[in-house]
Amino acid sequence: MKKYSMLTDSPGKSLFFFALPMILGNLFQQFYSTVDSIIVGQFVGEDALAAVGASYSLTTVFIMIAIGGGIGASVITSQYLGAALYKKMKTSVSTALITFLVVSVILGGFGLFFSRSILMMLNTPGNIMEDAILYLKIYFVGLPFLFMYNILSSIFNALGNSKTPLYLLIFSSLLNIVLDLFLVGVLGFGIAGAAVATVFAQGLSAVISFCILVRILKQYESSQEDVQENCEDKEEKKQEQPLYDRQMLGNMIKVAIPSMLQQSIVSIGMLLVQSVVNGFGSSVLAGYTAGMRIESICIVPMIASGNAVSTFTAQNLGAGEPERVKKGYLAAVRMVAAFAVVICILLFLFHESIIRSFLEAGSDQAAFETGNAYLSFIAFFFIFLGLKAITDGVLRGAGDVVVFTLANLINLGIRLTAAFTLAPMLGVQGVWFAVPMGWASNYLISFVRYVSGKWSRKKLIQVEDA
Image 1 (cartoon, rainbow, N blue to C red):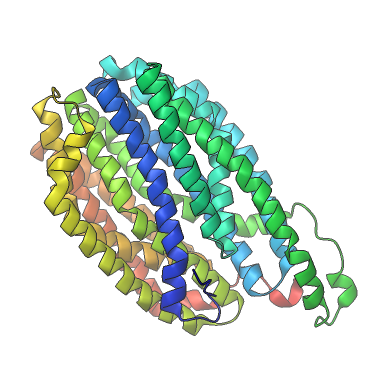
Image 2: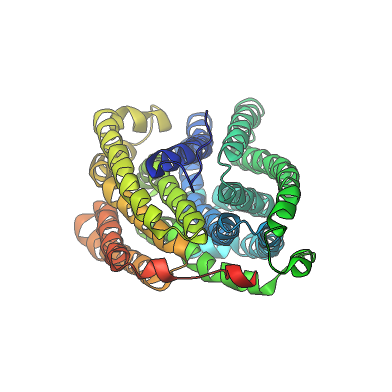
């Protein structure tokens, strides 16, 4: 497959072919998470599936924090790459890796010691509490590996290399499935086996990712020497860049915190309304868990398109080409609209078969009804998520974070308020009625900012001083 440049090739083609490996990679990532649920539901039972579901919203928040942090690092890295400042770019990579490794260890320790307290606050049903705690504890022990794996994937994407994360995700997905079948299906380790399979597969991929990244970064050393010949102050440019730069970290944080919020907004919303769903019992929770797994697959092309737009924006602003960003945005609108139509048709036609694949034959009817109702409703609203994702992607790639952050906070606030208000009146359906309301509001706020054009005047790096 031809490699398209985000700086010179057609914006539509470069965005699509950059986003495609990201979409396929994230689909594989969601695929083996879904296989976890299917294997647990079929081999262990409905309560075990509910236990995984009770843990899922919390674990996804941590992974979304990692992805958001990686995007913060990738925006800075992409802008340096667009400006051909390769030594600065490599410093930004090492700064990000060191910072987020420390963060992941702290978060893993926090989760390990407070798993029970968090699940109790979320009103987790008593009959699945111990299984949910066991799953979380194993997960948090391996959190640094899972965290770094996602950070490394974001850095590869920042370098315009979305194929390497795809290959590694395929590898980890297949390994995870094999380990699931062996540990859960053959050895009968249940919930623990599913957790160990996920941690081991992504941990091994994280180690391989790091080795590949080191090799790729070395290729930029000779390129930097060519760029130095055109610099006015050659002696300054020949100075070795430090391994860690606090000023770069500050710029990363400006983008990373809103990005963490944007990436985790769906997961935080699911986590905070989890107590509402839990209150309807483990059968409803099992059906809702199956529905969430499918939703997490459906949002992949939307989120990946937004991340591609973010990288596209950062590289082109770094190169001083804001007009290309606008052309890329229009191409992205067409792309997410096409994805939304396909998702709607597939869910509308096959939602019943999909939900039944998660649940054993003797599962409570409430589980089937909940999952079917959720998918048949949410199928029509993914266009709002797609438009939100790509509009946020422009603002994030430009480092224009104030309105971006406000829009995502309003999204979260609407989802929580509507869920807690509507659920007592409408039942569990009230939880998912709130979802498209949040997506649409987020998009409208971000779009107003995009139309203003103020994002194009933001500067995260100073090329003349680099």
